[in-house]
Image (cartoon, rainbow, N blue to C red):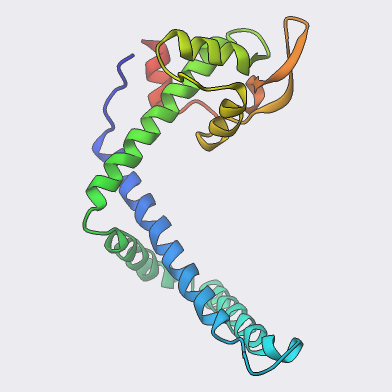
Length: 193
């Protein structure tokens, strides 16, 4: 099945999203390291973590102050949002193009999987993992996989798994139609073709 290529706007949005994830991870790691540095090894009990607690309170107060500032003067966002986007794009490492291409490939795989699951569900309430596994293996993939493998891999690709899905009077692990995310524009185009 041929997937249409992502438009320039979609590629830019993915780049921005990737950069924001990286930037948020860096900021969270730095804040965590700063809070952990407040622990005193020369003390015991609650006294040893008072520095961590104080630093957490300072971070919370800073976040609250920022929220108050934005509520008071929302025009600040006209400068803050472009700066945030610029920082997010700059947070992508030099090999970011390769990482963005890999994420785009993962996104395409996710969309193909969603389309496949929707096709197998058809007009029924869901599909059992055994049926999905049989289909995958008949098409030359998933060799050596088990239902347990699918149970762990599917949620990582955005396909929630239920313990009991009833299809044709049989109940087993499966994917229920209601749990699938909304169809993306790319999937809608692929399904229409």
